Amino acid sequence: MSKKYEKYNQQDETELWKSYRDTKDQDIRSYLVEKYSPLVKHVAGRIAIGMPQNVEFDDLVSYGVFGLLDAIEKFDPDRLIKFKTYAMTRIRGSIFDELRSIDWIPRSIRQKAKQLEQIIGMLENKEGQQVDDDAIAKELGISMEEYNSLLTKISGTSLVSLNDIWFLGDENDEVSFMETLESPMNMNPDTIIEKEEIKNVIVEAIKTLPEKEKK
Image (cartoon, rainbow, N blue to C red; front, top):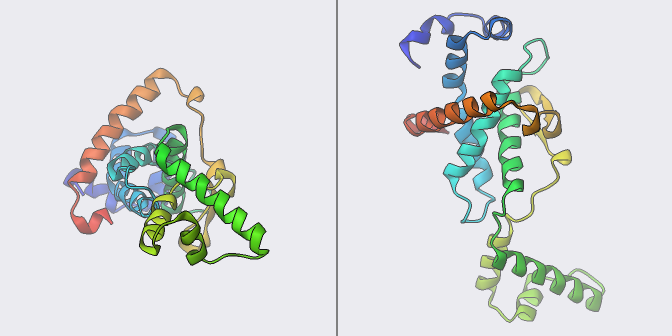
């Protein structure tokens, strides 16, 4: 944490949030951005585990930065929820929202996922019950090693509905993604440009964090 922000470390955080809400003081904002930037990489890292290899971790971080900025701007300290919980939900929602807007699943993986779904359905109809992995691999004409590799590639292609995603944070605080999303249509051009500039600053700052703070 920069020395220039040491005075904020001594303040009660709830009062600091209220001060920012009322004044929009840019020094307070910068302090909050620096303090909570590690959350972006933490959330992106957890999401990356279930993503195909073509989804770059740095891209997930970039998408998540927008969520952090939105969280800082919209957090209400009067609500009975911790900022960390709220921010992680917004960051996560921002990443999934961006993934939904781009064609990030390779066509070959889409085709394999569809083929696998059809074969499983066919075998279950034929057998009248759930089929095991050996039977599916045999029908596909591939080894179990190849089958397991296929499942790994496909596993990241299904994103659940944002309506169904809830984040359970500290002390069981729960917030739905749909409560936190904002349409770009509601942003003016100056806001969009500002967020893009700040996003680049945060991404660079995250890259320089010590490893223990990135996680």
